[in-house]
Image (cartoon, rainbow, N blue to C red; front, side, top):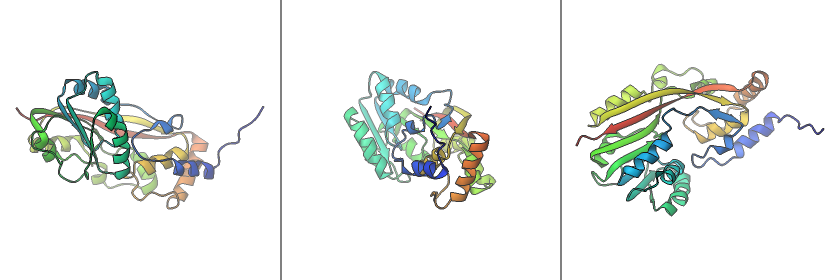
Length: 261
């Protein structure tokens, strides 16, 4: 019977370094890494809200995959849907995916004002925004309009971050705190209707998955390259070989807020 030889460290690292990183399609990780999903099922819930909305803005759409999925599930599409994205490779990917649905993608830096008129949308959505700009979200929502989003929470995947970078300061660990975001949203004039937070188990089954993940989610280990972190990657590879999957936990929160009528 033919035996396949175990993949070497060099082969795995080379594979993880070669996979394209555009968009938010994580299908390459199938069988190599797993992440539990939040109980509120964001994309399915979004589909229900899209069916009832008339003008929708998706902020920081990534490659457009989540909005595309939700529009496909929605049954009836909103009259107007538009998306913004700041990273040029994702702008191109999202445009190719969303244009057939009649959804324009506007290239807009994530830290710039939203390029839309006051009160233009009854629904603003976002999945994993780098940082929510509450004043701008409030401004482009019409009275009684809703912000519906899934945010990354504090200390997300920090088991992996700290493996590479060492212990992080408390202020960094507490970044993206949902209660701080609630206060910021309320200060901008929104009423927070729902805020639910969960920590979810992640498993990395080989070092290729870790390399691809850190190349794709660039803010985890800023400036990550295989060359710069070769000793840590080799140590991690040996640990996975000896002990099995590397376990971490992602933090997610569901945010639903309304602009007063």
